[in-house]
Length: 136
Image (cartoon, rainbow, N blue to C red; front, side, top):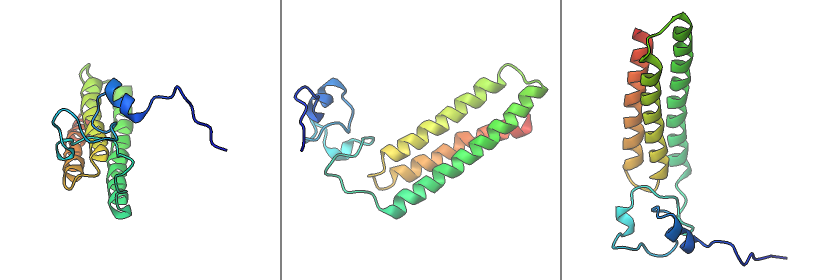
């Protein structure tokens, strides 16, 4: 038996409350077509990304994550030995930038090249983190 909740917010109502590119299940409003929305949650009628594409992106994100854990461990050891005041905020800033780019890659998984570009760009701030952690 299926029960329907009468006071539950629908996707269309959610789009009006939180105007983010992926909430609407109807055609885009305000003159934006689907090709202009770069970051969005998948709509119910979107085809699923291929398994190979999702697996490759997940492996790339995992590699970035493991490198970030290594940076964190090295930073912890450096903090125990004494580090300047700028050390932790700088590592955190570049680490969060890398995470934001990785999240953007997964939110744009239905685009052709944008996820790969964002994952490649996420390696940049992480490389800066690695260099700071290793050279200091």
